[in-house]
Amino acid sequence: MPIPGYDPQDIVERTLERTAPGTTARLELVASSVPDAVDIVEAESDVEAPPGALGDPVELYAVDEVEGLVACRVELPYDPSELPPGASPTDVAVAVETDDGYEFLESDTDLEETTVAATVTDAPPGSVIVPVTTHDREMPVDDSPRE
Image (cartoon, rainbow, N blue to C red; front, top):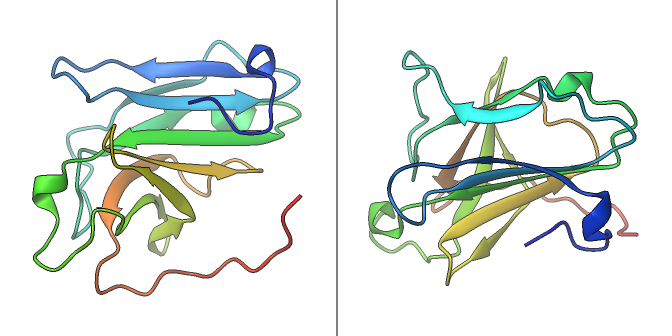
């Protein structure tokens, strides 16, 4: 699904196709200039997923080189069978690795497609992202006004 509120013609999409069905990861950008180097790829083998990971980490390349970024959406597949007991299928978020650990982004879950997506208006605060369970974790609350 494209970034809500934006003309699909204005969205630049990069995909990471994996061999298993239903495991495609997507990066979508609305910006004035998106270099060819921008991509979404499998994370390096030395990248450790955080506790509660519901899928493999991926890396965003060169997003910091994007000019005039208006919106950035990341969509990741997740494995619902990895949810802990008592967790709801909606207890899922996109987490971004930062210098201080993993930070949860406000996310939306598509139960039918078993994907989780986060849309931000700046580049994500890190380049490694992973779907995680939010069950028994405190999620940050974003009470900023919506446009």
